[in-house]
Image (cartoon, rainbow, N blue to C red; front, top):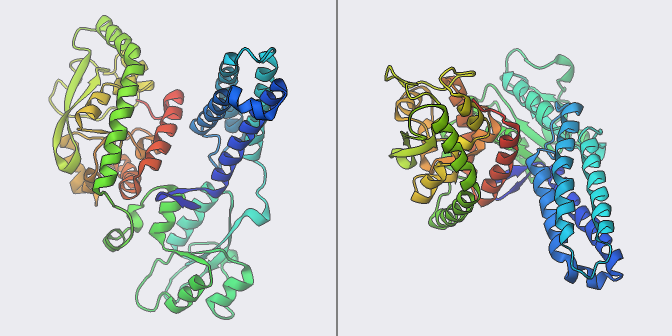
Length: 460
């Protein structure tokens, strides 16, 4: 894993994205150069088309999750994703190169050549997602600990990082009954640095269930670190591997003395400019969709097309959120707030459609322009639920240190939550966003949001 603007990205995914982006540029430029009879003339004549094609294919591939690297991902799922990418990328490529200058006497050659290159690239990427990682490209990880925490670390690595190779577990001096398989426990014949050197370890994850005085060989861990071995504690491991801050292995000192949680005037100003520009563009682009949604809502049932509701925003301040009405007007006739449930009978027929496609969220773009919300941030909750969740879940109030968002890291990483347990799971992603948010992470969330909307994942 590497860190870009505080956000952790798998090295293999980033390398794949950059390689594919360069490959699309090369394929398109080669096809154009053959028609222009000169590489020097190719880019001035068709540079706009070449760059647009590469950017479009990159965006579609990223939004579809084609670069997601999970050891548990199925071959069928990757094939479906590849087909969806081709269904979007090939027509886009054809359309972009339809606007070649008149100097190109045979634009169809450029179109079909580039489409063939894009198809080969996408199919190659789907294949590579399931090809075995080379031994030289894998990260050799030693887990220091043998208890339940060490077992949790091993499970996350095996599920989420196919390039991770666990060389074994080293028991701490004060640990009790091991929770990991006995065959994976390594015997210490010397010092920890000697063992690390012998096994060719790249990373150490300190996953001790018992951390009293004497439990950690601090000097030996420091020797490993100064020799170039990466050493991570539990909270940092889950942060970089899962993109969340796990509450069950979190302590306040890690939040206080660690990095992150940097708001700052410059970051706030950049985010606000980005929000205003993006929200304006999205409102203009989605205006016909919003008009149709309002008409169909009014035709199906009596009542307003929009509804307003109190939500908790920045620093706990309440504001009125605007959404398209997707439920009956008597959805809470008893006056008691309720979360939406799966197959909720309060949702109208039109409501099912607009909720699945996230069209009901579009009026929140006006909340973004007013400054109550951001384009990306934690989901704003109702005061009734916030009061309950703040009492039940530690650190819940931290999510209110940034503006709530129309979409967010938790929304694209976790399905719709309707219980306290779901809220706790989503909070772990919200805390990651609050700690590490930057414009780069906002762009990642927006790209992943496109994939969520197209698949309808997590809608209720």
